[in-house]
Image 1 (cartoon, rainbow, N blue to C red):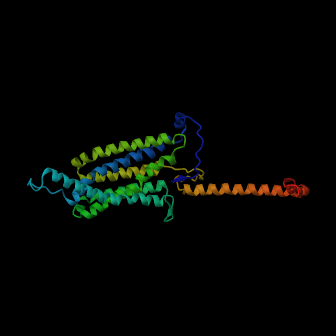
Image 2 (cartoon, one colour; image 1 turned 120 degrees about the vertical axis):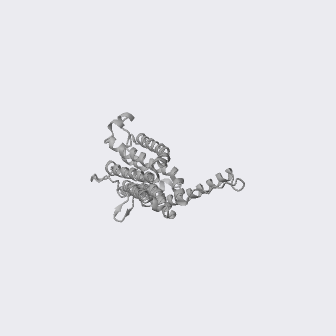
Length: 304
């Protein structure tokens, strides 16, 4: 696990309602965490259920047969299930590394830029929007190149996991004060669940009415709106960081193990210092009363 800045949380000074009332820039912060979470889940969960449509457009529908003896309804269902599982595994294998890449570079400096939570989130939304727009604009052409279509579509899930699917969970803990952080984190998560319901409900009917290419273009617009909201409404001021107005949360994330090691080192150093002070005090007493120190073994020893 990691801590951002100083691991010691500040003392709670106000009640729940007073904390919300006194939270600075609450509307801006809620827009940056809740609305972006909502828009991302519209994209992510909508496209999760949209996967079979894209794969079918790339590789064609499941073959059908009128011969009931060769391919009955039960066998057809098994074939469809096998293909769906295979295609989902393919897309998931492309998406999963996004989490590991995000975990590896968060807080690190690459290409002269610190990979802060806000910056990684911006990258994710921007690249998702570009990929969705590419699929939407070149939908007819990409259908003739199924491998390319699936590759580009799979990369949208990679950058979703690399960007907002990682950062939306972290962002509220960095944006809000400790006194109302849990409440507003839950509020942001609830907005995300509403977005998931919206995407899962509306994507398939929208594709049936307006076409698959239009849905991909709509995804590009949603991703761009989320990018703009992140750019203008998300400001992270790390604890004990100098206020330079950047608000990008560029303070390095300090590993908890390193902080434990540092605390142990400081404790050991303090203990050694105390021992040295006791020894120095004892030496001073010996210099001031040498006779007492010389007689001390005789007083504790046995008489002969």
